[in-house]
Image 1 (cartoon, rainbow, N blue to C red):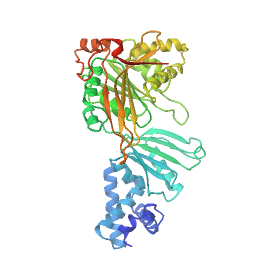
Image 2: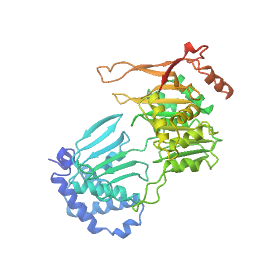
Image 3: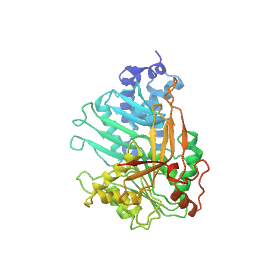
Image 4: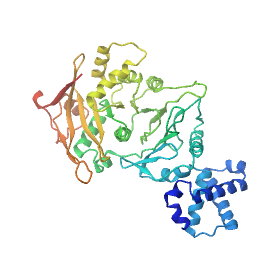
Length: 445
């Protein structure tokens, strides 16, 4: 069997076959012939090019005799092992892969197009997986061992990395890498079926008219992607402050200040939370505050900012429906160190939140806006939501796809008036409700 064939075989991809030993042998020879001090002074691209040249000379000198394709594949594999992340390196270069999940040395999964699949890849051993993990976390000056078995970080290239190792993980070291999502416009999201054109015009008007918007959805539904697209509609003359756990938003406006939280160091000190950043941002004269995700006591600070002059702010929250989003905001706000009765938090949410945009990932991997709801309640009233757009899904077809249609409902008069005062038209597909009976309203606890 040729080297090329073996490289494409499961045994070779596991790194446990004959050529796994070949790669290890050439990696050892490569490390013998390079000056590590000199290599560390080079830029990453120059370092890789130098290693490839040196390894090419070694193969020419010592064999084996290979075709051009086989030779380049062997060089790539050895350099990936020596410098990169081994079997994960090609996955990080594949733009179709949005998430990489390593469940111990014997199981590698990826997400493509919203669907998770297992790949015929394995690490040669638990030690090799740990070496890869240590190489990843060292780039952000972190360490992982039994005394610090969990790491959550963002790589310089933007990927979010989470690591958990034994004894906390019973399946071996687990590595999860979420790729840095590319920036999409709302127009591009229409092409992907995430929304339709009338919804685009409505969302654009709501952002321009400075409505406070909460993007809600479960993990992996595209909340950050939509938040980034909505943020792109903010006028260029405004001062925008973005606050995130892992900086992913890619706003193109000229006046953007990006803030990122910081975990504690190895001594357990120096932590800066989302809440610290939200509080500080209020002293920075923001026109808009964009919070990547509220997940704790910072919810209260965000709600207070929204209801005290910082209109047009945006945030995301983990929730499975618009009703759940309101309940979750109330629960998160109660986690603040300020003791506030639930009734008061209820009033705060009624005062602060204008719009909830609910996202759902369907069984076929498609991510769609399944509801745009306006919070119509006031003061101490029970939450009252008016649905102005929704996606009606049909049963999955034989080809594994989920189809459906977007439905539009009239806007409440108060919303239409606010859009009008901001110079924003009401999209014709929606219209204006002339009576309460025309509204698709419901109450939520």
